[in-house]
Image (tube, rainbow, N blue to C red; front, side):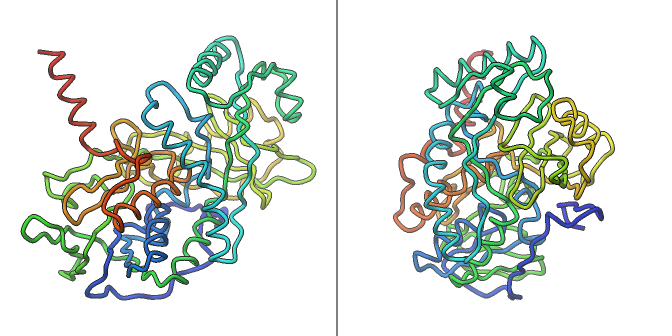
Length: 407
């Protein structure tokens, strides 16, 4: 059973383009574990650089978080206390998105529905306004583009919102994409560049010789020799047994449930992403309005629940009454790959092993910067400056500092 659950109500979260059937080869320059957004983005960049690349996926392409995501590119709206480490990387990656978009669309001949409409973060009631004001002050101190709006100013931009919306922040530089279209375009671009994609093959562990990773071991005792192995397995990157204890990663799954509503001329729709404290809503070019997402620290417990969907629908209805007339087209769940500080892990973890995982809810935002950084690490031997500081050492340093404080 796929870890991405798609309801019989609809098939929005499936790919219309399938990769060519491929058997696990014996060797390659670069072996990538995980055929999600991050894995395919890296694979494509390395194939463009002339490397032979094999991507090994335990399920099907995009079945972890990539097809379950909303596709938000929102460093301003996402900025919150404790994310100072992440903000420069997030802004750098957003700046790289237009070139990444153009290159992917040119390589695939497919549009990804890239929209630069911004994000509107809204508040209902005095308590929410106070928390929103705190967020705006943080954005201003961090130099993030964000404009405070009164209730009437919010509704002037989004007339379909309820009158109980009394304040908001407009983040004009935020953007969004359609995850399904991005994954289809990336898959096509990878195939055109010669990337081999092997689905439904679980990686059992690493092949290490003399302290260096020289390949991977797949289920059934099959081996793939590689000069470099890249772990981009998303929420599964921290699973016991995948890596030896000395290379263990602090990554866990955070389940999220979402749904797609079909809008019509009668119901109308939003003109940009709208966030409240309960939900986020993102209008897409195909007429869907995506409502997400729950945050559940429950491991790999699959499925869509009545409680999860009720919370999404009630949260959306509080601010957008028109959803009562919209048909539910699809419901699904997926797993965010979350590190201990919600920031990604990007580093050469051992000779021959590169890690690119733990992107939490920012996988789409961070994909261009991550792909460029890992490609530079593999081809040039070092991470570019914008991607440094995201290794596992930061977790050890934090633990040591807490230990000294307790002592």
